[in-house]
Length: 137
Image: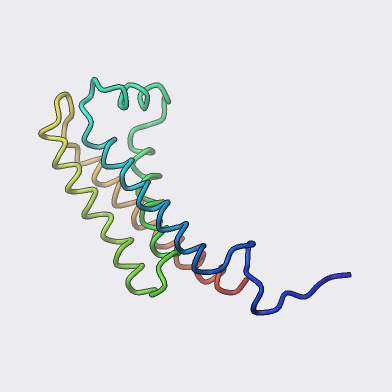
């Protein structure tokens, strides 16, 4: 009736290395999206499309950096390196926020930096138990 899963059977239908690769590719793609979104001029089609979502700017920052910090923590083979990569997303957020000074129609906002930091912190706090739970499955 119920087939027991042995240790050689891949979880979620994918081998562990493939899962890690998928997470790392997703992380890289999301970093590219955040960089483009952060440095695009205010009048660009990207920012116009984001503005049509009618989602609070700080909530967008929080959610983006939550995911950007959680993915490496979950996906890296070495837990410490994953945590460092996840926490480094705060530095990325600061640099991109500073880069907005040079983008037409954009302004540097302390609130955005704080939302990025809160997202990175929550992503790290959520990523660690998710990593442990996936390892147990």
